[in-house]
Length: 401
Image (cartoon, rainbow, N blue to C red):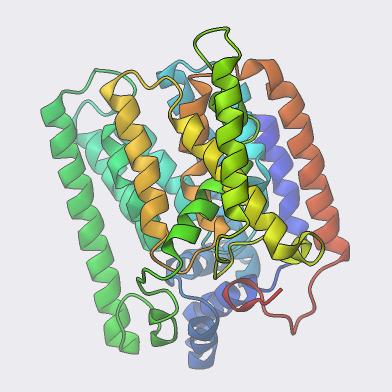
């Protein structure tokens, strides 16, 4: 695990991507008070200012540029996530270092953990908070977990959707009453922190939650909700390959009929995907859509959605299993009522993989999967180095492939 964390330090020197400039501008504002810098952030990004504030503080403390400070937040988060995953896997008795390594090396997590944006750090600290709460036996650990979770939510509001996981510890050491009180404390402290942040932002800039430019863009809407659900589920199954496929095709009996039925369901879902309306937002394969086309990607994601559903239905036994399924489905459902982006799945991906790994023989292909992930991450690094977008290209929410 330590070797993976050390290896990830190399991403610090990769070229900056366009969206990092927004957070770097906000970090510059915290050091200089330049109103134009923070206005540039509000025009480019809908996230909070917390990551930029922390990055600015790190830069000032270490005597480095603000752009490096923002990246350091992500790199610190990567080490935090590694420790949290190791603790969760040990508590759930899911094996040693292989499973955390698979999650850390997943291209979605590895790549975003090397960027100074608010996509990865909230996940890292939210997982750390959940790991702390799962081990909590007294009020001190509960308050610590609540504070860490509140910090994650302040970095990015999406972290709030992981709240139900606070009470889903894999052991029975905590009573139902203790878990309820713990959830209430985490919810209260998170609410206080978010309220304090929004009051401060309103007094300084005159708006709540996010810049007015993004209120309509990211507001709740039922438009494309079904397509969004299908595509979110499909992308989640894709990101969790081959865990998701093995879980989906797993069966309790050696008879081939059950697997044939499941393959038929996946095939029918693919056919339905051919007539599914296209999704909005960033729910696509980026520049690869130029070659595969939106129709082909829609068919593929619909088939993968069936894999996602079947994988969740594999051998749930305890009440906690059904609660974990409900938490994952709730996350996907809530996200589907707003502007979609596949990178938001970074929040739930580790828990989806952990859930699946308890029902399959993950060790059988973990080594090969780690090798594949390393290869993909190396290709991504080379691509970022030699085929970087031009400075004038929009990235993220405004990018039109």
